[in-house]
Figure 1 (cartoon, rainbow, N blue to C red):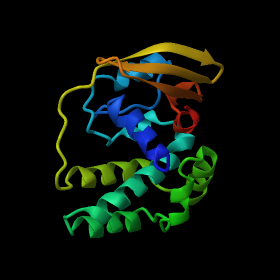
Figure 2 (cartoon, rainbow, N blue to C red):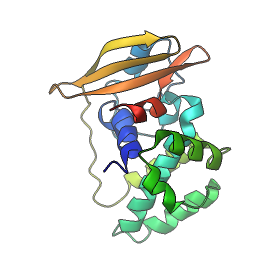
Figure 3 (cartoon, helix red, strand yellow):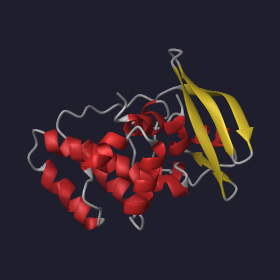
Length: 197
């Protein structure tokens, strides 16, 4: 059952296979390889600037995904102060109520993208992502990863404004990744990755 496929893809794309951005951040890159190289070798636990690596029109998807992941973390955390802090952030960013029926549609990329784009429109995605990751980084039991993740981007195939590739880590584990060109710059495409098998 792939109910949390989007969350897993977001984590793989932004935190596990590709270390998320450090303090530098990004606003796309000239090629998929350049974007990957900018991501590579940075702190895998710092999601604070992730918005600069995601296709701008797909930011509602990562905001929605992180909102859902944070809801679970806050709901099951032994730290009873986490849930009120999470709810305060939701209020600060004027997020919609969590639609529990969407949990059963998480394996449908088009439904998730449509829902996120409609319900999370107008949200300060960059601000929410920075604030929610800072909050979750302080959650009890969170162990910091300080080592850098080493990976290579291979088999990049560019077709117009889309591209795919394969990320291979030092152990040989691989996963597909997608990119999207927007206004002349390349970004990660979460929606395309959600469709990959």
